[in-house]
Length: 487
Ligand code: NAD
Image (tube, rainbow, N blue to C red):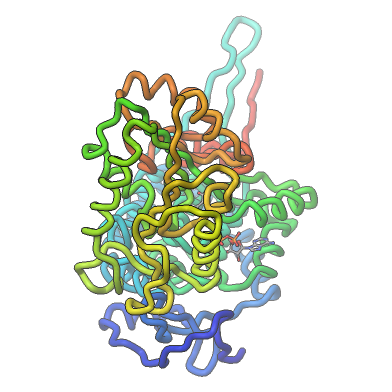
């Protein structure tokens, strides 16, 4: 293995900022030895944070073989004991939460404060505890004089978990927690952009889990492709782009792996004439800009009734101007950089294209190099219409197109015209909003908020946003094999 630069070159000096002793100890457990591995940059400062191990397909073969060998004993522990072990793993995450949040903040870019790094660690613990304590009982299907039939949920075997770089720890837990709870073992491949934080959390969990029940593998797309298609993998939990999701569907023809696919979205929000612009501005803002817009189910297109269009834009602008952006380790900041150059370039291209098509930039609209190489300010794009790239493509960054409409039926049709359907929201009088919500084609529709999740409430997309549900009882069923006992 050799120390190679990441796929994107940094123009900044490679000086290691001071790590706390706890951060350094955790990184030391997971990173490649000095002089080896792949350099991982701090997203805000572009300094080298550490070295990700570069594991190969041969390492993956070994990992899957070990996970397969460990699965029967893990399953045989039974639900009660597994639940205790998973709760102990959640305690271990809590005990290391601050150090993990700091590594996450550096590697991903998200600030410690706001709905960001510390919040993400809190969610990891909460979702793990929920999966540990949620009970999936066998169901009695028929019970009469002739037949007694029950539906049982058993372990599937080895689960492959493949994740993105935006909420790397929380999404890893969404995949790991239900899988382990049901008696499966897990091989997880984090995104090559954010491997260190995920490997660090896995190493913390492995302080209490039996050996080989949860194995992290740090590799590239080739390793991901082999993991998804491996004959000894029984289920793939994938969160990432629709393009990669399609490849995983194709490879599942080979191993007949069950799939849960959480793919991209382009969530619409519809603001009804009955909404109060001032009252909804904060929630609209965070619905769009949580994690600096790098969130699958963030508000990505906002349709506002013409009667309050200017007021909503003014209210959003005012929140944007009061919300600090900068380096994540600075306690004052609640917005950060884009995580990587590729995503930064997408955001920049979409805003430039909107300008070229005559859109009005209300605030932001150009990179903010004074904050750092990958910073892009909150950008509100007005007087823009469907069919422009900023509306039709997923921006996955701190930019929101705000589109004027005059008729609610027209707004619903426009919200539904794209081939994705992860989330959506309707803002205004709650009763009126509920009626409109039923007509939006997405896996979740929120009323007067956008993007809030709960560990007991199922989450999943429709259309090209994927299939399969996560969380709660539905999430446990998704990582289980069904067995009917009849007699
Ligand atoms: P991506 O699809 O490029 O990568 C995701 C993961 O897949 C990475 O770990 C990558 O190494 C791996 N991978 C790449 N090619 C593979 C292959 N052929 N087989 C198996 N694995 C492969 O996505 P990304 O850029 O990391 O994430 C951004 C996208 O993810 C956005 O579109 C966003 O909307 C979506 N996303 C969706 C959700 C959700 O819950 N629906 C959550 C977060 C992100």
